[in-house]
Image (cartoon, rainbow, N blue to C red; front, side, top):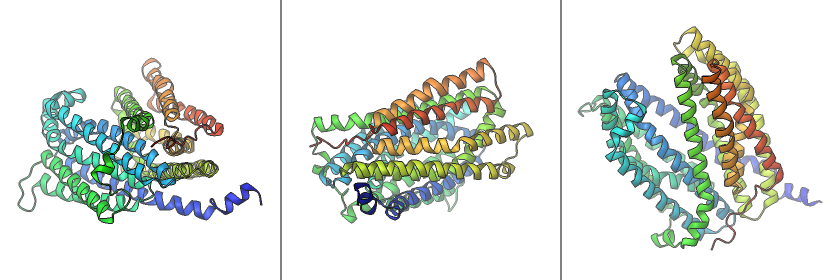
Length: 460
């Protein structure tokens, strides 16, 4: 029997692959569905207060968006190391990376809290100049800032648990926190159970309570199980400056990648916003619908990062390559199926929105465009967020994503909107050239095999 056949029978067979993927991906998918659903409920609750209130909360949360992008990048970067260390069963260094993550999360959270507390008006005014919106936004932001520190700690443990293949625990605790948030929103916003109505300040207080509960339950559960992440203070801080420097050689590109993507998304939003109300409405509707179809993909990309990282950390590079090939194939197949479903369901889903015939027409065209290239979008996400990051190739993931967004997607969108003054669906189609370019560059990198980097080597 050849080496290849021995591999398939031993370390890698279809049943083993799908069981591992399902175990990691399914809880993440469920968590994202729950989060999306309850966040929609939160939006509806705040929306009942009025347009000014919902605008104030939405704008104040743009600050959290920047914080969120930084934290996701930092935790995902730590996850690259944890998944590879887990593959080689190096428990000592897993605890060190968790310590680096917690230290970084606390430091970044404090910076965001201090700046947000002393400059709330300036933050809100960047997005809106109306006095009513600024006033409500400031009141909301000053309270919700307390949750940032707890959010940072939660992010570190959630990503760390996922990186060692434990996705059930974060899902269950996230469910508790989200239900807690919705419950206290109802009480504090509208003044129920004898509590005075607090409006947007009630929404902020509910978020703080939910984050505190989530952090306490998560940390207590980690240490109660006495698992690998239940590290002592000494184990978390037993790191040298050289160790931190080597870790951040991989972590920092991942942070930049997510910030780069977040800023690019804001530029796209600004371009569409300048094109008029109908353009904005069309894009918002399309994003709302397509996000429902993307939930499955984020679970798959997380599974790819963990499984590829585990195999490379264990020294099984051939297994990592085979995982990468199978995830690439599955992402394309899933994208084709989801694209077809999106095309078939979109006319009926658009009936849920009370909009003009022009907005509906624009939205339908955009959704059909998305349906056609959906398999490319799915492949790009699984490749960048899953395979390349899991393989330790964070720098090239950054280069591919940054180059295609800022040198192809953003310029084409701006030219199409403001120079040629194309309708919104053509401008959106121009932005999709970024996805196609990313796919081509990503495939070239994948086929080269140079994306496999055991970042745990020489880490004492």
